[in-house]
Image 1: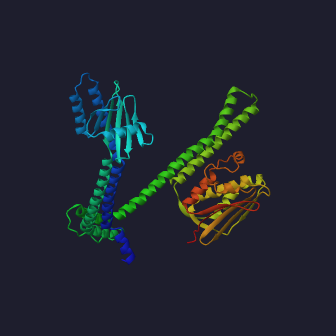
Image 2: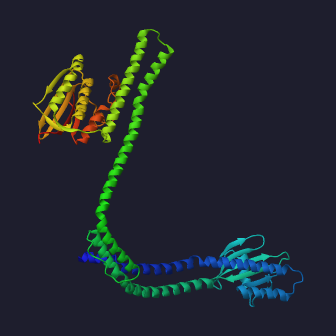
Image 3: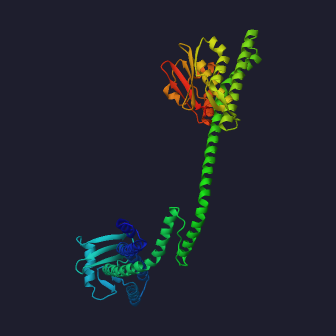
Length: 498
């Protein structure tokens, strides 16, 4: 281990983390206590004293409102309020003379009360004000004390004034905060020492477990946990040893199962996508011929045209559309069998030149009728390994596509070459180029570059999809190229010379 790695380990060690956490926790608790004590305790204390003031005020009003209440009863009530809640109580008559008081020497109090009521320079804050009483908080500059005072005038003109001091509460808060800080520092120092010492006992087996886990991550299952701890760490160590023994045995099976699972998921996803695409495309492609068949059949039934020539035309359209539907369904079944691997494959060695020549001769009449000139360039033989029926399907699709799109000079060039253990077959026809944005999509099922023309010769956009499916099964190369005066389709497949 390098010096930098050792320093990094110390920086992230459990001992240091526990020590820091404990220090932060104690500091946070002390700070929280001081903050709450400073910000909330005064409000709590003031609210509590306000409630006591209002309750005591109501009590004095009740006593003074009773007729013929004796002086002793009034003074006893005042003394009880002063003793129970430390509230100074004064009852003044209509001329500001003190009739009853909870203390003697109240000249300063009378002076301060008069200042509150009549001196605009006195600092004061109204806390509550209603018809029954007024509660204010004020500071007396003479005594350097803050007070909360509740006062109210009774129906007979007498006035009740009750006073509590809040300055001592603030001093108590400051003293308590200092005490909490001192105790917190002492607890912090002791806690750091204790945590640092005790944490060593826990980190030693954890380090050993970490080493075992690191070796297991490197697929080294020989190292085991050797600690004798019987607590949770010991149980963990035993579990890691058991896991190490089982992991080596199961890892190869897990990998194999994972590969199979991925294959199954891929196959299922592909099949679901193909099924959805198949249904959507079939629905779209069958819509037009079915509509035509229905329309012409209804015309025949309703006798729109009575002459025999029109009826024959209607029947020809129906038969032609039915034949297109039948051809499309057959091609779809063929494509479905190839894609799902249900089409039986008979791999054999045969001559691609001979196969292409027979297909070209079979289409000779069509080529002649359309006035197409055919050029066939090939070696004497080109032997390949494949299913002859499937390769016949590929070449026939290329040739049919070339015939249907041949324009201008009306030339089709078929070329077969053999080199580097592979046979390359290309079919070129003069005519319009395929738009660049369509080249990558012509292999998709039901995709048509020129829908009107494809419809004209009965195409359904499935032929090149069949070609793609067949050649993909052979891992063969294939493609299409725009030439200067036409389009060339090609494919390469393994030669049969080896």
